[in-house]
Image (cartoon, rainbow over all chains, first blue to last red; front, side, top):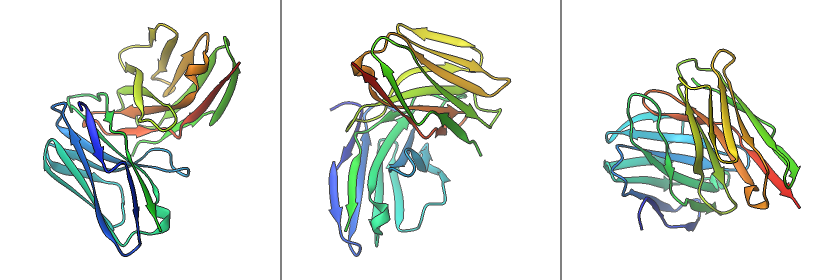
Length: 114
Length: 111
């Protein structure tokens, strides 16, 4: 599959579990993002990685821990989540230039915390 | 930081009518304004974008206008069809490519 791929597509986890979301982009982009999509905040930026360095963390609780081992892969490590963390987690990538450019989204991981 | 407001949150139109969605932004440094369409159960996908050196851009039935002075931009869909039903997001971006999204507009095109 080309573009941005996320796994798993669906995840159900208990509040004491530890799980990871994976994102892979095949577009040669140099920036990757995690977004949270819920009914309350439709597209909320969580983390930005540019050239494999985290350049932004939008006051996200420490129970979410991102990792970007290289420009093609992005992970979101989850531990001791709360039911209100249930949402669709979208990964995106883009090619950072002088100005803004299009972000390409993955299909998302539908997370349910029980 | 950037703040993007989007209106309306829901919009119902009859097939064949036009639909207009409006957004305002706060950061004068923003220079890139994309619009995304998200169909139910699918990922957001870019449908049109505009840069700050252009006032209007058109692609078949969709068009976007930008007023930099007033810091607002709009999406116009003409001759709406049922397949246009989706959630539409505006966004504002700047150097470094951080995109700040609006809260979305649920568009419903009724037969």
